[in-house]
Each structure stands twice: as C-alpha cells, then as structure tokens.
Length: 232
Image (cartoon, rainbow, N blue to C red; front, side, top):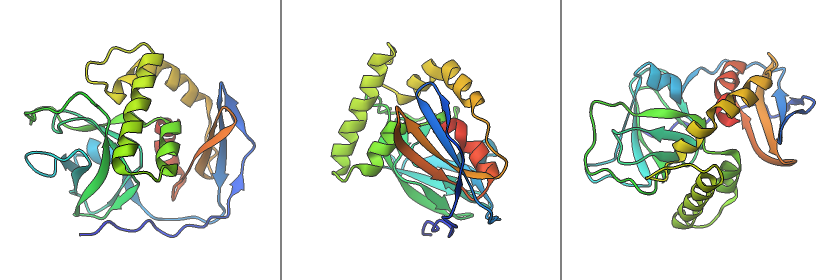
C-alpha cells in the first residue's frame, strides 16, 4: 500500500511576535480555518503499541526500515525522528515526513544515526522506540537543502554527529546521536518549558542565531503541542 499524501492545508497564517530564549527564536503560526484531520504521532503510536518497526529483511538495509501501522488511524512520522532500540541493527534518522494509512505497511527512507553499531543479532525483548528529540534543527535544515547523493548526505550527518559529540564532551562507543540528547536533556527541557504555545497555533517557525532553520505546520494545535518539545 502506498504512503498517503499529506492533507491539503491553508497556507495563510497569522504570525506571532518573536519569542526568544538563548539563541533560539520561535514564531508561532495560527490559522482561522480549522482542520479536523486526525492522526497519531509516531511516539503515540509506539506508546499504544499501534506500530511495528523492523529491518526490511534479515540482513537489514541502512537506508530503509519497514513500518507497519496496526491501527485504523493514520500515523505521521516527521523528518528527523530518531528511531532507537535493539530490535533494529542501529539507530536511524527518518529522511522525510510520511503519513502512513491505517493497516498499511510501508518502507521509510532513513539515515544511520549510530555509525559504529550494526548488531549481528536483534533482540525481541527490548522494544524499539523513538527518541524524545528530533535530529537537531540545523541538521534537519541541511537535509532539506542538500541535493547531493544519499551517500554524501550520510557522510555529512556522521560528521555533524561527531562534531556535536566532541563539542559536548560525550562518550559514545557507537557515535549514537541519541546520546547527544540524553546529555542535553535538562537544558532542553528548560528551553521547551519557556515557550508557551498559543491555543490557536498550528505551526512554528524556528530560528537559531538569527537564521531560519525550520518551519513545521500541523493540522491542529494538539499535534503542535505534541511535537514542539522534539522540534526544539
């Protein structure tokens, strides 16, 4: 079954005044039109055991994962989602946003987020999950702008992760991107709690060091509330 197209959305938004914390600036986007499209976030689907994630075959393929939606709801997987765990051979970074229809199984495009692990054996005891964060915002922006080959993008991502690990003095034997967020968790939570989402907002434009890095728009305020902590 093919991946479902993202629903049509009104792109005329009211833009809030900027809200700044440290080097991060947010502009919340609000719309008068209401959209009743309902879908589960990836984290919600995993928490409710409504999705199954696996390698595409016994050998595995770095650039792909198989995702099965076990519910009747659509499931959204945002670009930059980190899929972690021992039921896959290494942690992955989702390449592009997809909306998976109910009861569908699709292959999603991924990048490696853990350069020095490719497990020969997979565990059925420890479930696969998503990280509390997305791939960092500047990296998501680089992915969106990068028109080079998949291999070239992957090499850049490995370099970005290694640089962050070095900057934050993190010890990671596998160069896992998730270790970066575990190290920064307290600081990230403080920043996230600072930003208060207006009740009518459905999207956010995020700037770092006075440069726009991402714009994320959802069908409703609930999904923005769900994803903002990951986006920041």
